[in-house]
Image (cartoon, rainbow, N blue to C red; front, top):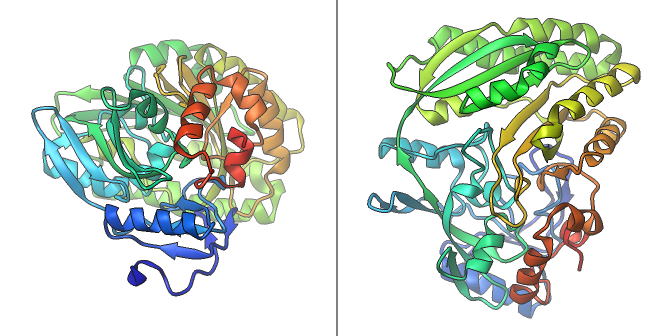
Length: 439
C-alpha cells in the first residue's frame, strides 16, 4: 500500500482556480480493494476522505484537509452488455474517453453535457446535465452504481438492489461514499443534426416554449448588454453524416469561440468599459450553420477559456420571466458582463437531489472570466433565482445552505437519512457538505 500514496501533497486547485485545498495525504488506488484500504486507514487515522476528479466543480465539494483520492488509475470500461444495453465504466474515466470508447462500439449515451473533461463519477455526483425536451441529465441515465462506504463495504445499488441508496447516490455529492463504477443505459449510436442560428432576445423569449416543444434539444446563449442571442437546436437525423468543414469548424469552434473570445475576455477584464462594445461584436461574429454528426461531436464543445459559473434550475414555466428580470437588472446596473448567459432545459426526474427532481426545469447559467470579481453579479443573479424557487447546481458557485435546500427539495430528508445510515461519522464530510446538507 505504500505506493498508493503520493510522497508529497502540496496544494490542490480546481480547474477555475477559485478553490484550493491542502490535503494531509493524496492516494491513487489502482483497484477497489486498494481503495477500501485507503478508506479504512483514513478512518483509523481520524482523517476525512474526499475523491476528486478533474476539478471542474466551482464549489469546494471535493476539497479536503484529510485524504484526497485521485481516481486516475480507476479507469476504463468493465463491461458492455448488449442484451441489457448498458455499459459499466470505472469511476475515474473521463467522459471524453467514455464517449470515444462507446463510439468505437457503435453505442452512445442518449444525452450529455457540453464539456467532457470531467470524470464519470465527478460529473454524475454533481448533477452534470445538457439540455433535453425528453432526455434528462447524465445521472438520470445511470442504471447501477458501485461505491465504497465508510465501513469499507463495496455496495452495489440499482432499482432492485438497495433502491433507497440508488435514489440518492446517482447524485451523491461525494457524501455517501466513494463511487467506483457506474452502469449507464446506452443505445445504438445515432446521428444528430445541429442547427445554430442567431436570434433576437425578444424573439427567443417569446417563442421559448415552442422552441423547446419542437426540438429534442434546444438551448440558447444571450449576450448581456445586447439584444442578441445564439440558438442551437439538436435533433435526430437519418443522415447523411455531414460534420462541419475542417476550416469552417476551426474558425467557429477554435478561432472565434476560444481564441478571439479569450482575447476579448482579457481586454474586458483589464478595461471593463469596453465590454458592451465587445459584446455587440461577439454576438454578431458567429454565423448560422447546420451540421450532422454522432452525438458526442454535436453535444460537446471545446471550452478553453476559463471562467467561474453560477447556475440555477427553475420551474420551466418561470424561465422567461426570470431571464427578463436578469436582463433588466444588468441593464440598470453598473455591471459589465463579458460572458453570455446560457439557457437549457430538462424533464423532471426521480433522483432525490437532482436539480430537476420532480419538476420540468429550465437552467439559467451565468459566467465571468476567471480572475474577474464575481461577487456583485452572482449575488444579484442569485437573488433573482431564489425568488423563483431556484435550485443551485451542486458544482457551481452559490451561497445556499441546508435550511434553504431542505425547502427546495421535497426529497431532501430522504437523502440525509441515507447519509446518516451510510456515513454516521461523517468520514466523507467537508465544509461545503456541512453547509449544504447540515451536520
